Image (cartoon, rainbow, N blue to C red; front, top):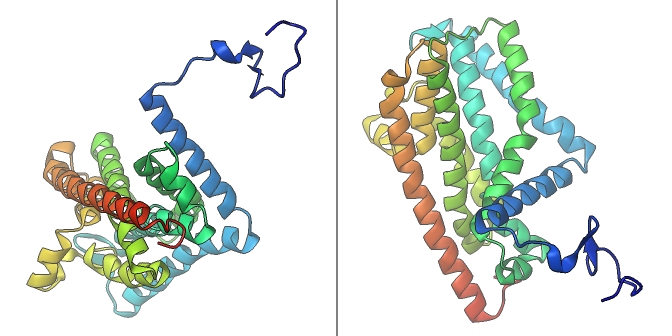
Length: 293
């Protein structure tokens, strides 16, 4: 190509003034991150398309938090698990927001693509399906950030106070909560597609998840069988660590066991999600009905 030869747009000829032949291919890590970032960006953009959603999502956990605080007050209980009720519920609602965000983003990712008629393009593209689901989850978390803010403001106003002695312990608990929630969503992604009733299944899973994870009351008060079942949810251990590190001044060493359990259970969920997603993709491609699967 000579300098006088015209080009058909920047994508065909040059990019930012650089000839196309000189543009280097990105590595696998950069490609994965690009898929995660752009998927998250697209999710947030779609979620902001309707004003009612922009208003509804931050207000929903706020109303739920206020309702549960009034419930405890009506029962005459001002402390729970050695902490004040406002602080206990504040951490729990943070866990609830994160859990909800992943159920309706990463867990619903593949089903959303099917519903939009783009699942065939997703399965046939070179983009990592795991990175796509992670992008949905990250987008869901970013989308729910206003909910964290409004709930934190209400919590502070009604007496919730943090007692953090080791910031690393609190940061580790937050990371464990996010990773555990994303792992759950990843595991549910294939299941939701197989069910063909993802919306109903997500609604069914959501509330039992709140109860078993100890969002509203200490997990230790659950019956023995349900307590054992709650240990199989990574978010449960993350919330335990978050409450201990932010309300009871626990150190990183003191919450390390809870963080390790959250990480181990999250790894199991991630493995289940990876295997189930591969099975769904294989079955869909074999049937030749990607958009109807």
